[in-house]
Image (cartoon, rainbow, N blue to C red; front, side):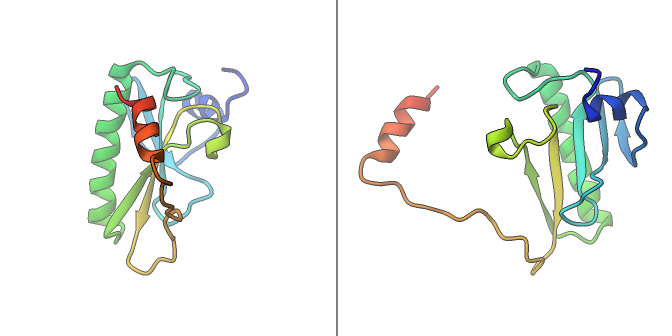
Length: 133
């Protein structure tokens, strides 16, 4: 995709701090990190979201995310990390090219989780039936 910023990074048109690269995957530091060591892992082929990606490439992406997460814990002083995909703009996806965020976490870092809510009576049962595989 010509105007996609991640495709431009993959093609080398925009510089990045590469963390990992193979034939199908590129991982690089986020230029606006939530915390130091925040990494983005992208497929080199353009897929807008999870619905479009080939399962084989997705499996490879997950394997790379795992390896980078281990390195983050070992070498960045993080005691954990969040793995996040913002799937479509309503979910916060700014760049319409599927990507995983790996966000290093430390105790007391001030990065709060999402607020939790409760289901109303019968709501959980209804929703579970709608999305059950």
